[in-house]
Length: 531
Image (cartoon, rainbow, N blue to C red; front, side, top):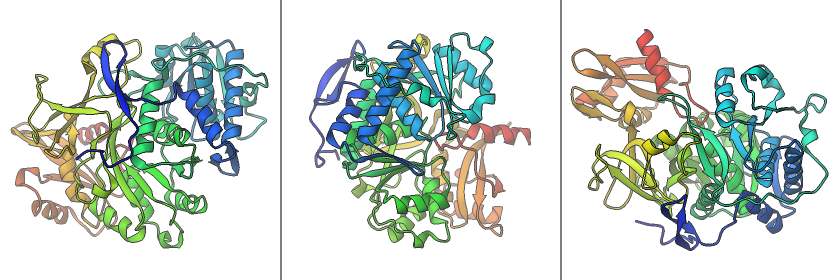
C-alpha cells in the first residue's frame, strides 16, 4: 500500500542539516512567513481566524502579524533571538507566532499548565529575551533575578486596560527578515520523562513540509474550516491546526478549552469541516445527551492520534455522522507532527494500525543493536524524512543519542507489516515484562475500550518480587454497577491469560493527561507505588 492514488505534489531528494538527504516537496514556500503571505494572496477576504465574537480575514491577519513582527523588532529583538509564549488558545497566539516568523525570531512555546520552576528552566535554557504571557498567569512568571536574559514581559488579556499586546501592533512597515529554510522557527520542549526537558528545534522547512503533508493527505482547501480543540502551544495545535490552515488558506476556529457540550455548539454554528483530536474527545462528544440536535453535516474529516480509537466509538461515529472520514495519524514533536497517516478509506479495515508512512517519510523498526528487523517483528521505531527536526537546542549529547544518520529514535515499540501498515504497541518504558513475557499496554487498553461501561483505561506495571512486573489497570467507568471481576472476565475472554490485569482500580475521574491529551502513566505509577 502507498499514496500513489492521492494527488501528492512532486518531491525530490535534497541535502538538509549538513549530511542528511531527505525527500522534500519540490515546490514549497521558503519559510513560514512566505506561506502565510501566500494564504493572504490566495484568499485575502476569506475568514482566517474565528475566536468567540472576533473574526479576521487573511488580509487582516497578515497586516496585524507584520505589525507584531515590527513591534518585536522595535523592542530590540534581532533575527534568531528567542521569544517565549505563555498563552492559551486565542487569536493573539496566532498573530504572535506569525509575527515572530516575520521578524525571523524563534518562537518558544510554553504550556499554560507549566509552573514557575519549569518556566524558569525553559526561559534560561533558550535565553529568551521576551515573554508574551496571559495576564492571568502572571503569578507563574519567574522573578527577574532568576531569568537574567529576559528583557521584556508583555501581558495579553481580553480586557484592553490590562493588556499590553497593543504596544506590539506597530504601525510602521518593515520588510520581513531574511530567513532560510533551515533556520529554527520553533522551540518546543519535550516532556522530560527521563531528565530535564529538551528543546526540539523545528526548522521552517520541517513545519512547511508537515503542513503540506496534512494538506495533501487530507485533501484540504481554502473551503475547509478547522477547529482548534487541543492546546495551540503543542505541536498538534501549531502544525495540524495553525500552519496547516495557513497552507491551504482555510479558516481556524479557536476555542479556549475543550468542553464537549460547548464544542458541539461551535462546530455546528461554524460549519466545521476538519478536526484533529484525541479519541477521548470524540467519545466525550458522543456521550452528550443532545448530540443528535447539532447539525454536523459539514464535518468531513476527523483526524485523531495519541491513542487507539475504540471500535465502539468508530461505529457510533459512522452511525451518527456517516460522511465523517476518520484518519489516524502518528507523530511527535521531533517529527513536526505526522509521520504516518491512515488513508480514511482504509481506517475500518486496519483499526490496529496508525497508517502508512507519510509521503517522503522512511520508517524502520530496529532491534537493540540498531539492526532493521523483518516485517511483522516488534522493535523500536526509527523515523527519517523532511519533517524530522535537526536536533535539540544547545544539547549535542541528547541529539547524538537520539539521531542516527538522520533517523530519529522514537522510543516507541512497533512493527511494520508486509503491506506497509505501521503499528505502535507501547513506549519502551511502558512495556510490561511479566516473568519474561512482554505485554503491550495498547493491546489490553484496546480490549477494555470495547466494553460498553468503560470510558477509558490505562495499563501500567505493578512491581512484583517474583515475576518482576504484573499487569495493573486503572479504568474509568460510566456505570458504577460494573465491577472488577466483570472487567477481568471480559479481558480473559479476549486475551492470553498473562495479559489479563491482575489488579484493577476503578474510578469515575478522568485519567491525568498532558497538554497533548496523552495519559501521563508516570503519575499513575507513582500513585500506585504510594498506595
